Length: 79
Image: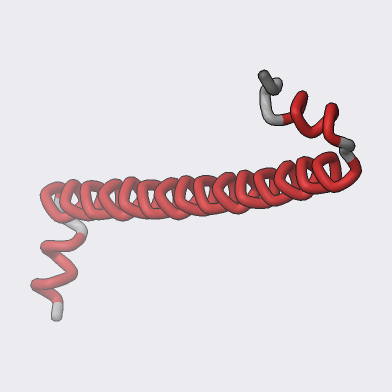
């Protein structure tokens, strides 16, 4: 037991401890950033889906309320 403590508190043991601590911090930051990025992308995709549905509903309301001339204009014009 004393030998393990001697190694842990030696200069080499401290250096290994610092390297392990730094690796744990970098790994934690990486995992947190990746999770935040994934959540951001999923949120943006969900918002885009809602926008498309809202736009689709708005277009449907315009089409249902349109007469023949307005419907031609909505479709890009009639010949």
